[in-house]
Amino acid sequence: MTKKKDIVKLLLQGREVRPCKERGFGKAWANIAVCKYWGKRNEELNIPVTSSLSISLNGHGTETTVTPCSGNDEVSLAGRPIAPASQFGRGVAGFLNMFRPDANTFYRVETTNTIATAAGLASSASGFAALAMAVNDLYDWKLSGRELSIFARLGSGSACRSIFDGFVEWNAGASADGMDSFAEPLSVEWPDLRIGLVRVSTVPKTVSSRTAMKRTRRTSSLYEAWPVKVAHDMMLLKDAIGTGNFELFGQVAESNALAMHATMIGAWPPVLYWLPESVAVMRDIWRARDEGLRVYFTMDAGPNLKLLFLAEDEDAVKKYFPGVDVVTPFVKP
Ligand code: DP6
Image 1 (cartoon, protein in one colour):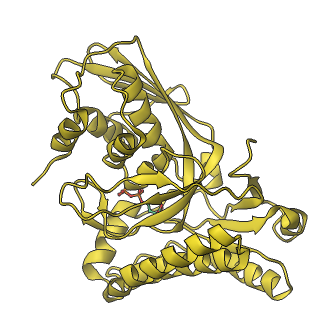
Image 2 (cartoon, protein in one colour):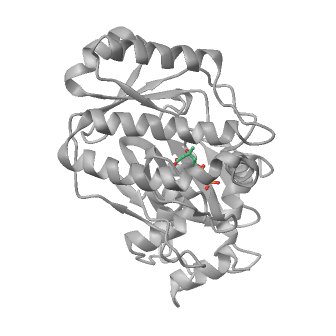
């Protein structure tokens, strides 16, 4: 079986793992998928079954510095040390192990999130993207966007999309080693597009998205329908983005998210990330839409909702959803 280390060797093509600088720096935005990544054809390398499409959240993400140090890896988040045995600590160590030149090389990884992690935004995508960029900077590898995307994907699938700004498509690819499974930015912008973060709960989820997607792929009879739906949704979304058809865009994004959740509800044991409050917000959205407001939602592996709407409806959306945090993905905050 091809290992992550083998892929990193392929990516580096003879580049050296020897620091050229004192420290490396990387910065990447979080992203929200409007066509989801759900299910892997290769679990070791995070190669997806389907392509996906996301929006990077300009200004909301992660900044990371990597410095070689001695004795042990030291990882910190917002200035606080992270335990090596924690999920975060193990994730970072796993990433560093992909290129660590020998057992005596250690790194200090200092990470700060510039997103409200509390707002229910996943930080692992921007986290691994920023880490990949920081390592690339430290070693002065000058990896291309495509290579960086593959490198970040080895940390977490969705991280491959956080390498780029704006609308980003992650091509599933077909090769066994995943060298054709990388993200690319679309050359379209939608400055009026708004994303509203509706926080329902900040309690950590009991099932990680990694576990849930594995279980869905293995046990859910509904999963068979997923790649067919994604292929159709990708086409419709690109059409909606290209023509600025917001209703089509919102409808397909919402339907795609609900279909993803349906596949996991159909898994065994079932995975249901929704809380009663999530469903209440869904009903509020549907009611608002019935009353003429152009607002749609998407949801990831958690109970929180992300609203999709246009700048002209921002005031009305805020009236319906008073606690909403508004992000402008195409305009610097
Ligand atoms: C529901 O990228 O976190 O957010 O590759 O196992 O690290 P791993 O999974 P991850 O899954 C994200 C799932 C999602 C959908 C999406 O972002 O496309």
